[in-house]
Length: 381
Image (spheres, rainbow, N blue to C red):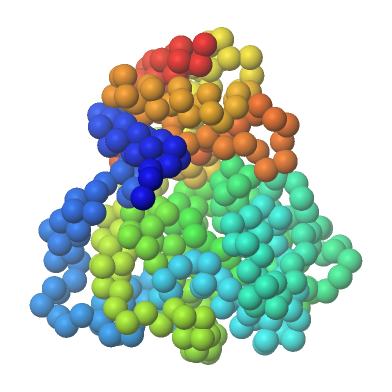
């Protein structure tokens, strides 16, 4: 089979990122199959007895992930799903049946609207409405004054496509209270809930406790292979297990994903506050670097970051920015930025990238970031 240009470019990017000696974060895609398998085999024994039998349809190590996650979130029960998309489809469908209202209020930039191909409607028969289109979560007044009934309010924490933004704790409490006034249930898209605790100044049980149910991911922030958990009341989770089977999520064996989830909870979760704190340093240094550069305009969104991830916007096309980014990695061994994307509704010639600060990024000083910005901008000229 002929190799496409896109496949060649992807191989070039992955090779450049893997060979880089300085990165802000390592993604799982930066490693080969052999490397990921070897690391899992070497490390998994630290978090689970590898002498146990493998899981079968959700017992064993998978059940351990469910128990551990429910405890961390302060929820009664939890169910492991192969994907977050399926977990949320099931959660929102279950709540629609319980409330008798198939309408879900969510943000137009939320994951189900942006990245799931309209599955809530086409697969689950639900209808979505948008209390706001501003690049932030809705306010209490917007929920309270929305002109039609809805059964469930879904809040994505943080709202990724707006720049990984979060409300204040007081704003979050108020919007949940406004939903309760309307007799709506509240579901949290907490794919990245793990890194929200520093911004809110609250622990995971208190944050999750505002809602009726919450979904969390294991690969987005915790470096797991895949997998997600839906947590909530035991009766809801029991129903969700039935729908999980109907949706094709009753997987025979999932021990690699489950073991990697336990490793993420053990190793990455405690470090996330460090990543969040240093992301603010990196974002500030990027601002300084671009302000001193020849670029005509830039934006770091939000500034300062609310989590360990944020956006950078520049007035160039994606092709030029991708080329500058990969050339910098190839020629200097420094990966500052990865992929660039056009805005969903913005003018042509304006692009953004997502910056993640994880363990490798803790080594970067303000000077390192500013120097990397200068090297990057040189390759744009």
